[in-house]
Length: 271
Image (cartoon, rainbow, N blue to C red; front, side, top):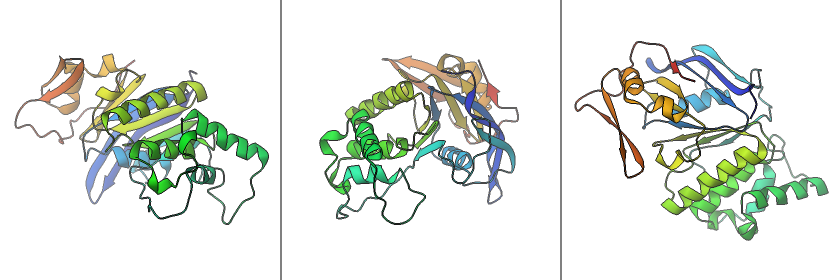
Protein backbone atom coordinates (compact mmCIF):
# COMPACT_ATOMS: atom_id res chain seq x y z
CA UNK A 1 0.00 0.00 0.00
CA UNK A 2 0.99 3.62 -0.42
CA UNK A 3 0.48 6.54 1.93
CA UNK A 4 -0.88 8.69 -0.91
CA UNK A 5 -4.69 8.32 -1.11
CA UNK A 6 -6.00 7.09 -4.47
CA UNK A 7 -9.43 8.46 -3.51
CA UNK A 8 -10.09 11.53 -1.39
CA UNK A 9 -13.71 12.35 -0.53
CA UNK A 10 -13.63 15.75 1.14
CA UNK A 11 -16.72 17.17 2.89
CA UNK A 12 -19.19 16.00 0.23
CA UNK A 13 -22.79 17.15 0.63
CA UNK A 14 -25.59 16.25 -1.80
CA UNK A 15 -29.29 17.21 -1.76
CA UNK A 16 -31.92 15.66 -4.03
CA UNK A 17 -35.49 16.98 -4.31
CA UNK A 18 -34.91 19.15 -1.27
CA UNK A 19 -33.70 16.28 0.91
CA UNK A 20 -30.14 16.13 2.24
CA UNK A 21 -28.77 12.75 1.14
CA UNK A 22 -25.10 13.21 2.06
CA UNK A 23 -23.96 15.61 4.73
CA UNK A 24 -20.25 16.52 4.86
CA UNK A 25 -18.94 13.01 4.14
CA UNK A 26 -15.15 12.62 4.17
CA UNK A 27 -12.82 9.61 3.86
CA UNK A 28 -9.74 8.37 1.97
CA UNK A 29 -8.93 5.10 0.20
CA UNK A 30 -5.33 4.11 -0.53
CA UNK A 31 -3.82 1.88 -3.18
CA UNK A 32 -4.22 -1.82 -2.42
CA UNK A 33 -6.82 -1.13 0.29
CA UNK A 34 -10.15 -2.93 0.45
CA UNK A 35 -12.74 -0.53 1.87
CA UNK A 36 -16.34 -1.48 2.60
CA UNK A 37 -19.04 1.18 2.19
CA UNK A 38 -21.68 -0.17 4.57
CA UNK A 39 -25.25 1.01 5.09
CA UNK A 40 -28.87 0.01 4.69
CA UNK A 41 -31.10 0.94 1.76
CA UNK A 42 -31.71 4.65 1.27
CA UNK A 43 -28.75 5.97 3.26
CA UNK A 44 -26.96 7.38 0.21
CA UNK A 45 -24.45 4.69 -0.85
CA UNK A 46 -25.33 4.83 -4.54
CA UNK A 47 -25.52 8.64 -4.47
CA UNK A 48 -22.02 8.70 -2.98
CA UNK A 49 -20.67 6.37 -5.67
CA UNK A 50 -22.34 8.46 -8.39
CA UNK A 51 -20.72 11.56 -6.92
CA UNK A 52 -17.30 9.91 -6.96
CA UNK A 53 -17.90 8.91 -10.59
CA UNK A 54 -18.77 12.50 -11.50
CA UNK A 55 -22.37 11.58 -12.39
CA UNK A 56 -23.83 13.59 -9.50
CA UNK A 57 -22.72 17.15 -8.77
CA UNK A 58 -22.29 17.76 -5.04
CA UNK A 59 -23.69 20.83 -3.30
CA UNK A 60 -20.31 21.27 -1.66
CA UNK A 61 -17.04 19.43 -1.19
CA UNK A 62 -14.76 17.73 -3.68
CA UNK A 63 -13.62 14.32 -4.89
CA UNK A 64 -10.01 13.71 -5.94
CA UNK A 65 -8.64 10.59 -7.64
CA UNK A 66 -4.85 10.40 -7.41
CA UNK A 67 -4.87 14.02 -6.28
CA UNK A 68 -6.87 15.35 -9.25
CA UNK A 69 -10.50 15.91 -10.16
CA UNK A 70 -11.85 13.07 -12.29
CA UNK A 71 -12.01 13.90 -16.00
CA UNK A 72 -14.78 12.45 -18.24
CA UNK A 73 -12.32 10.23 -20.13
CA UNK A 74 -10.22 9.21 -17.16
CA UNK A 75 -9.16 5.56 -17.07
CA UNK A 76 -8.12 5.81 -13.41
CA UNK A 77 -11.48 4.49 -12.26
CA UNK A 78 -13.27 1.19 -12.88
CA UNK A 79 -16.94 0.71 -12.01
CA UNK A 80 -19.30 -2.23 -11.56
CA UNK A 81 -22.86 -0.85 -11.26
CA UNK A 82 -25.56 -2.31 -9.07
CA UNK A 83 -27.69 -3.63 -11.89
CA UNK A 84 -26.54 -4.80 -15.31
CA UNK A 85 -29.44 -6.29 -17.27
CA UNK A 86 -28.17 -8.96 -19.64
CA UNK A 87 -30.47 -10.30 -22.37
CA UNK A 88 -29.88 -14.07 -22.39
CA UNK A 89 -30.33 -14.13 -26.17
CA UNK A 90 -27.64 -11.55 -27.00
CA UNK A 91 -24.87 -13.47 -28.83
CA UNK A 92 -21.97 -11.95 -26.90
CA UNK A 93 -19.35 -14.14 -25.32
CA UNK A 94 -18.02 -13.33 -21.87
CA UNK A 95 -14.55 -12.67 -23.27
CA UNK A 96 -15.96 -10.21 -25.82
CA UNK A 97 -17.71 -8.26 -23.07
CA UNK A 98 -14.47 -8.06 -21.10
CA UNK A 99 -12.62 -6.80 -24.20
CA UNK A 100 -15.14 -3.97 -24.61
CA UNK A 101 -13.61 -2.41 -21.51
CA UNK A 102 -10.44 -1.69 -23.50
CA UNK A 103 -12.13 0.94 -25.64
CA UNK A 104 -15.61 1.55 -24.22
CA UNK A 105 -15.22 5.27 -25.02
CA UNK A 106 -14.94 4.52 -28.76
CA UNK A 107 -17.59 3.62 -31.33
CA UNK A 108 -17.56 0.83 -33.86
CA UNK A 109 -15.57 -2.37 -34.10
CA UNK A 110 -11.92 -2.37 -33.11
CA UNK A 111 -9.24 -4.74 -34.30
CA UNK A 112 -7.44 -6.15 -31.26
CA UNK A 113 -3.68 -6.15 -31.10
CA UNK A 114 -1.86 -9.28 -29.85
CA UNK A 115 -1.02 -7.37 -26.67
CA UNK A 116 -4.69 -6.53 -26.08
CA UNK A 117 -5.78 -10.13 -26.65
CA UNK A 118 -3.11 -11.28 -24.23
CA UNK A 119 -4.35 -8.78 -21.64
CA UNK A 120 -7.92 -10.06 -22.01
CA UNK A 121 -6.73 -13.62 -21.41
CA UNK A 122 -4.69 -12.56 -18.38
CA UNK A 123 -7.66 -10.74 -16.80
CA UNK A 124 -9.95 -13.72 -17.43
CA UNK A 125 -7.37 -15.92 -15.74
CA UNK A 126 -7.00 -13.58 -12.77
CA UNK A 127 -10.76 -13.58 -12.07
CA UNK A 128 -11.02 -17.34 -12.71
CA UNK A 129 -13.36 -16.88 -15.68
CA UNK A 130 -11.41 -18.82 -18.31
CA UNK A 131 -13.63 -21.90 -18.09
CA UNK A 132 -16.73 -20.01 -19.26
CA UNK A 133 -15.09 -17.24 -21.31
CA UNK A 134 -16.61 -18.53 -24.57
CA UNK A 135 -20.12 -18.90 -23.16
CA UNK A 136 -22.83 -16.33 -23.87
CA UNK A 137 -22.84 -13.67 -21.17
CA UNK A 138 -26.60 -14.10 -20.62
CA UNK A 139 -26.23 -17.83 -19.95
CA UNK A 140 -23.91 -17.38 -16.97
CA UNK A 141 -24.89 -17.66 -13.32
CA UNK A 142 -24.96 -14.58 -11.09
CA UNK A 143 -21.55 -15.34 -9.60
CA UNK A 144 -20.04 -15.99 -13.03
CA UNK A 145 -21.45 -12.75 -14.39
CA UNK A 146 -19.97 -10.82 -11.46
CA UNK A 147 -16.53 -12.22 -12.34
CA UNK A 148 -16.97 -11.03 -15.93
CA UNK A 149 -18.18 -7.58 -14.82
CA UNK A 150 -15.16 -7.25 -12.52
CA UNK A 151 -12.85 -8.29 -15.36
CA UNK A 152 -14.50 -5.71 -17.65
CA UNK A 153 -13.86 -2.99 -15.06
CA UNK A 154 -10.24 -4.12 -14.49
CA UNK A 155 -9.20 -4.36 -18.15
CA UNK A 156 -8.42 -0.63 -18.35
CA UNK A 157 -6.07 -1.10 -15.37
CA UNK A 158 -7.71 1.48 -13.09
CA UNK A 159 -6.24 2.76 -9.84
CA UNK A 160 -9.65 2.70 -8.15
CA UNK A 161 -12.42 0.11 -8.49
CA UNK A 162 -15.95 0.99 -7.33
CA UNK A 163 -18.56 -1.75 -6.90
CA UNK A 164 -22.20 -0.99 -6.10
CA UNK A 165 -23.79 -3.91 -4.18
CA UNK A 166 -21.95 -6.66 -6.12
CA UNK A 167 -22.91 -9.26 -3.50
CA UNK A 168 -26.66 -8.69 -3.73
CA UNK A 169 -28.67 -11.70 -4.92
CA UNK A 170 -25.70 -14.07 -4.79
CA UNK A 171 -25.79 -17.36 -2.90
CA UNK A 172 -23.52 -17.61 0.18
CA UNK A 173 -20.83 -19.58 -1.63
CA UNK A 174 -20.68 -17.08 -4.49
CA UNK A 175 -20.49 -14.23 -1.97
CA UNK A 176 -17.44 -15.81 -0.33
CA UNK A 177 -15.80 -16.44 -3.70
CA UNK A 178 -16.35 -12.90 -5.00
CA UNK A 179 -15.09 -11.35 -1.75
CA UNK A 180 -11.95 -13.53 -1.87
CA UNK A 181 -11.46 -12.63 -5.54
CA UNK A 182 -11.68 -8.90 -4.84
CA UNK A 183 -9.24 -9.24 -1.97
CA UNK A 184 -6.75 -10.89 -4.36
CA UNK A 185 -7.37 -8.16 -6.91
CA UNK A 186 -6.67 -5.41 -4.38
CA UNK A 187 -3.40 -7.01 -3.36
CA UNK A 188 -2.27 -8.34 -6.73
CA UNK A 189 -3.13 -5.28 -8.83
CA UNK A 190 -2.50 -2.71 -6.11
CA UNK A 191 -5.91 -1.24 -6.95
CA UNK A 192 -7.98 0.57 -4.33
CA UNK A 193 -11.40 -1.06 -3.89
CA UNK A 194 -14.52 0.63 -2.55
CA UNK A 195 -17.41 -1.84 -2.32
CA UNK A 196 -20.90 -0.95 -1.12
CA UNK A 197 -22.95 -3.53 0.77
CA UNK A 198 -25.93 -3.73 3.11
CA UNK A 199 -24.06 -5.56 5.82
CA UNK A 200 -20.44 -6.05 6.72
CA UNK A 201 -20.07 -9.63 7.93
CA UNK A 202 -19.03 -11.17 4.61
CA UNK A 203 -16.36 -8.47 4.28
CA UNK A 204 -14.92 -8.60 7.82
CA UNK A 205 -12.07 -11.01 6.95
CA UNK A 206 -10.74 -8.79 4.13
CA UNK A 207 -11.65 -5.17 4.88
CA UNK A 208 -8.77 -2.84 5.61
CA UNK A 209 -11.13 0.04 6.35
CA UNK A 210 -14.84 0.69 6.59
CA UNK A 211 -17.03 3.67 5.73
CA UNK A 212 -20.23 3.27 7.76
CA UNK A 213 -23.01 5.43 6.34
CA UNK A 214 -26.34 6.26 7.94
CA UNK A 215 -28.63 9.25 7.72
CA UNK A 216 -26.27 10.87 5.22
CA UNK A 217 -23.33 10.92 7.67
CA UNK A 218 -20.31 8.64 7.78
CA UNK A 219 -17.77 7.22 10.20
CA UNK A 220 -14.57 5.88 8.66
CA UNK A 221 -11.56 3.99 9.94
CA UNK A 222 -10.61 0.39 10.63
CA UNK A 223 -13.39 -1.98 11.60
CA UNK A 224 -12.22 -2.04 15.23
CA UNK A 225 -12.22 1.77 15.33
CA UNK A 226 -15.68 2.24 13.79
CA UNK A 227 -17.82 -0.73 14.80
CA UNK A 228 -18.10 0.29 18.44
CA UNK A 229 -21.10 1.30 20.48
CA UNK A 230 -19.76 4.77 21.32
CA UNK A 231 -18.80 5.65 17.73
CA UNK A 232 -22.03 4.37 16.14
CA UNK A 233 -24.19 5.88 18.89
CA UNK A 234 -22.69 9.27 18.07
CA UNK A 235 -23.21 8.67 14.35
CA UNK A 236 -26.86 7.59 14.75
CA UNK A 237 -27.61 10.25 17.35
CA UNK A 238 -28.94 7.72 19.86
CA UNK A 239 -27.74 4.62 21.67
CA UNK A 240 -26.59 1.69 19.53
CA UNK A 241 -25.33 -1.68 20.77
CA UNK A 242 -22.67 -3.66 18.90
CA UNK A 243 -22.96 -7.39 19.57
CA UNK A 244 -20.66 -10.28 18.67
CA UNK A 245 -22.68 -13.42 17.98
CA UNK A 246 -21.29 -16.67 16.52
CA UNK A 247 -18.56 -14.81 14.66
CA UNK A 248 -20.92 -12.17 13.30
CA UNK A 249 -21.29 -8.51 14.22
CA UNK A 250 -24.78 -7.15 14.90
CA UNK A 251 -25.56 -3.43 15.18
CA UNK A 252 -28.73 -3.01 17.22
CA UNK A 253 -30.47 0.34 17.65
CA UNK A 254 -32.96 1.21 20.36
CA UNK A 255 -36.57 0.37 19.39
CA UNK A 256 -38.59 3.20 17.92
CA UNK A 257 -35.61 5.34 16.93
CA UNK A 258 -35.50 6.94 13.48
CA UNK A 259 -32.20 5.70 12.07
CA UNK A 260 -32.42 8.10 9.12
CA UNK A 261 -32.20 11.23 11.29
CA UNK A 262 -29.00 13.16 10.54
CA UNK A 263 -27.07 13.91 13.72
CA UNK A 264 -25.58 17.37 13.89
CA UNK A 265 -21.87 16.66 14.12
CA UNK A 266 -18.94 16.36 11.71
CA UNK A 267 -18.02 13.18 9.88
CA UNK A 268 -16.09 10.85 12.17
CA UNK A 269 -12.73 9.81 10.73
CA UNK A 270 -10.72 7.53 12.97
CA UNK A 271 -7.19 6.27 12.55
